[in-house]
Amino acid sequence: MIKVVNPNTTESMTRSIEASARRAVGPGTGVIAVSPAMGPVSIESHYDEALSVPGLLTEITGGASADGYVIACFGDPGLDAAREVAPGPVVGIAEAAMRAATYLGRSFTVVTTLARTTGRAQELVDRYGVRPYCRNVRACDVPVLELETDPGARGRIVAECRAALETDGAEVIVLGCAGMADLCTALTAELGVPVVDGVAAAVAAVEGLLRLGLGTSRSGEYAPPPSKPYQGALAHFGLADPR
Image (tube, rainbow, N blue to C red; front, side, top):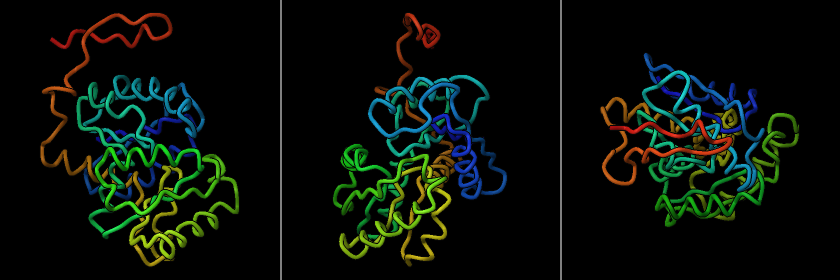
């Protein structure tokens, strides 16, 4: 079983994410998508991202267990912390999408939502070592929740994708928001180039790791966190001694 955690609390987006994830896995692999009970309705700032992590970690350490996990937000919030505590491998959709894009062409451009989030995407390009492949990070300036409600959203996304191909010289498009997952197949056909949905890429990556019998290393940085008490509203996040 692969658990896909949408770190925001918008259930309609979680259902769309779940549909994309289910299409990406092979027969016999179960998928469940969940949203935290607490956190922002969308993640569009560093503040949103920081406050999404407690709910995300609660979904990973509590509730129904899973063999592997996907973090379905393009900022990959809480990824390192999740790898410390999850019993199976954890993959973020930005890392999975960017790495997948490098298999499909010599260059890619990320097309995301708001311009204020492009800096975070650029940081992740460097972190994941794919800077030589990344031509640009473009924003269509559609708020995340309006991806579902704004009739003009798709046209603005397509316009940025075309600019990525024509101006940036990109050979692959990476969709920079989990809320764009349902556009992937149609955009690939319309644009004539590979369009990578990070949800599908991350689920496929986790499924592959599980088939190989591989999980997160517990030697070094991703060893279980030291046991210690937490105070106040975070008191229940204290971890038992793993020994």
